[in-house]
Image (cartoon, rainbow, N blue to C red; front, side):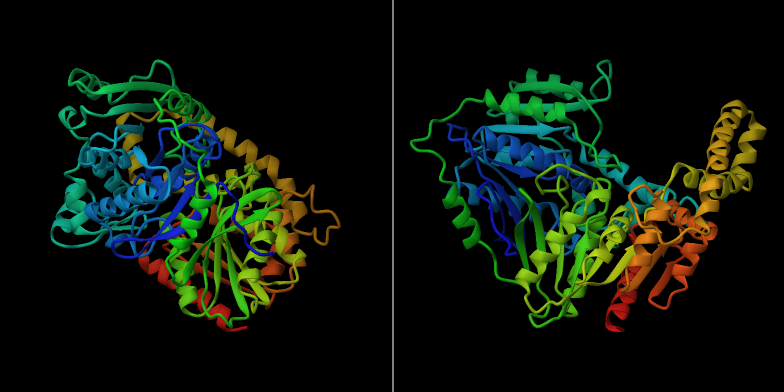
Length: 589
């Protein structure tokens, strides 16, 4: 199946200041008058991943009322060229200016900027410098970069709480950055220049925005929750800014570790945009022109943005071409949660580029309803059609590829086990911390790895001696966990002998994943993290299941464990080690 482009969404690459920039243009499909197109300014670091599905849903909704949206990844972020460590505030602002220029020269103009979280600050800066921008659309804006950066640095401190020599304060991290050290936080290396800039940026004063109209949206957990930015909103209004502030009730999708959407925010934004004053077009929007221009801007290089179909839905992918004569390619299946094809801290981008440099073509893609892809999110349990379509797209673009390796982490690793044995083209699978969670299995891990560790902790006994410990609540929680664990023991017992099922559909997840691996006859690599509850749940399943132990003893299965690593191998040294294992495995068979 040849990858094809649909008429309303066009992924392509622009030439940026330092390298190629991935852009997706959601062209207006309604033949109505509109205010022109919108440039989207993304949030920072992992919030960019967590917001991606919401951005795609909103962009599609806007296109239906005649407003196009350009979503552009600045250098070192998302799918664009370079590493995050090479990014800076000024560079990202320059890249986004190129997006504005493209909309004005190739599409329907640009008079509106849309920013989320820290991206709202950059959107406001761009608008204040550009007299042609007359409106800002802000979602959950960050007012003060220094406060935001402090919260971001605390992620590093929390991650090192269990280590004796771990960093204890954000001041220490800032001192290291000031001395020229790149600070790694949750897989994102922050250079000294960017660290300094983040401490300085903030939303502009009212005087700088007085010529603009602001549509400001916040998502609150309840109707009686006050806005943290209420004072700033009042200051803007008093300073002459035409500001339309609206709050909706919904989840904090930009910070949750599960895939979460806030439909009330999308509906409220769409309603507001429909009421914006518009400039009548002399003719309907030329969708074919946008498509041609997007294709002409595709910067030549080893990475290509693709759009292919799964049923009636558009799936977005990035192809890393590798060696044109390669006979073995890799398809990276997106993990669950809020991730999309770049992976947490761009781990899939990094892996794909390293594999392509070694000669292996790699396709990264979004499942239906995830990231930028269209359709309904069905979950990893129903990803077979998506994976098959992705393999078809890879082999259509690289016809010499005759065998495929599937790579997946967590939920997508389990989805791969459900699919791989059904496709003769799949000769290898690489599984990272496979998802085998059941309520009973989770309870077992909590009992073994949480309660025992807590009893051995000095902090727990100090808390008990101080009288601040609430024994009643802890006992109730413990009893609930123990009850769930005991209820699951019979499932573990049955798993120790069961194998060779005819029908997998009604099996528990540990049984089903084991059966999928039993049926797959190709090569298998299993990568495990040492400091991860999901990995520990897998270990407990293996310990209680003879079927799983037999599978792991098979000569076709290779297992590697990185003892100190977290779930996504976020540190650079861990990424290098994982890549080395995968490359050695791929080259060995």
